[in-house]
Image (cartoon, rainbow, N blue to C red):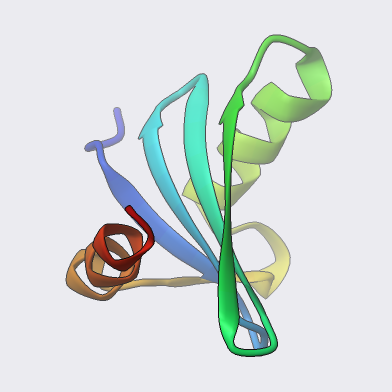
Length: 78
């Protein structure tokens, strides 16, 4: 059983994730000096598996991200 929210980021690049459930996440992607927010409700199997992979830290593609950093960036976008 996973605790939500869970925070992850891609290893080596500025793409961060806040996973709020087994079917929902928010992605923040840094593009130059700007951050782009993308919200995903997982309805299709590949999206559901993507969330499972992030939670299980599959293949070293993700790092655990501090929630405070994510939330600071998210608040600055609103």
